[in-house]
Length: 486
Image 1 (cartoon, one colour):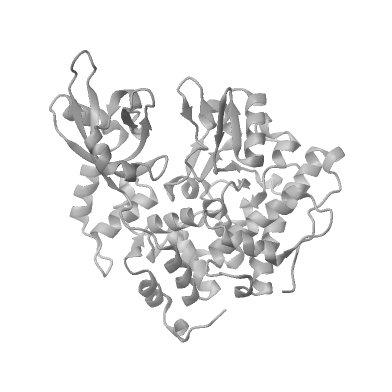
Image 2 (cartoon, one colour):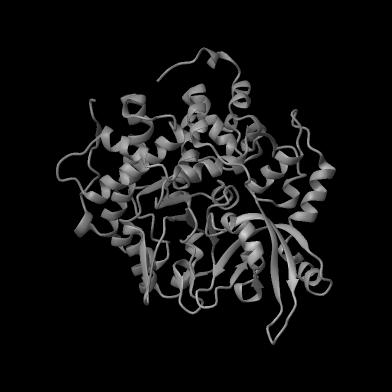
């Protein structure tokens, strides 16, 4: 890799030169102002970007008024609906929106899932669709400023809430190439610290690089399609925060009941499930989740995790969401050589399903969350960075490079080699996004930071499979993949 003379300049100076307006001052350790509004990170940084000057000074009054006016809480919905329906006001606020096109009637409607407003209660007039349809179709669900009005009942038709206008939450376009080139300006240790700051963590609060890399491992499913992971960790290590608050592209489900309809496809509502339109579905506190039909869910998961496809009744669907299991584990069970899955729900007690998880993250390698781990410095805007990670999922060049670099022994298990390559690819996207061809990364760096960790993560899955099903997997280990001598 080429070295630049300006690497001697302070990291912050280079960071601001490379990313300009995408750098914000995050004060999560001292300030309770923004955190008091309980905004997810991507939304918080969006507000900071709007109301912060070049020195990081926040216009508190302006930010407060904006949040109160444009970021309502769920309990504010009745008041909004009253203003729209009974007082004929047009109300603007930030929300997640999805659209539905009715084939039979040609009508177009929308839903606001966070406020339980469904397609039957809404309409998008044709002139509004002509103006904003392209933006509304960018993803299954889109964030933006919605403006709502009321369409009065007429000719026996019921009144409906109508969409008046829509402004994208992320109106700027993300330049993935610029992000890749920017990586050249930083050494690996500096880049690792930048990644941590982008997701709200203070790199100086970690004891060593191993702890930092363990935290970054949690980001693997953010950048790689259908990457299925299991993480068991002590309480208080930040699992829920990272998967639930940092990215607008993922979904965190905590406890409760999970059904095939909710996860994959609801026949009665003719509605796609959580795996459709999300980068990952993380099942938090997985020990407390109840599955309505264990056999039905297990069968659906096995099929989906194998090839990204699912069939419910006559409906066939496909998606790219990874499945992430997050659970707490007692100290005496933090050992990959004993059964760590005993307390998981029954659905995950079958080796054939566990075999479809690509890797295991040892959450006990991560420190318990303290104030020292909260960012209080300039860092990449979380909303920008998570958008970059989302875009990296569609870049196939990294996997092609991994395929060139990795030597696979004869008669290696296909699931093992695929799992290792997927994880190694995700590590490359995060740590070495500037790699354009195999020669751009040294064999040492690829082995140390991509291939070896991937083999270790898959290796734990293999050990657990031997415990769960000794007849099928006993004594088997992951193949020893090596780096080719190009």
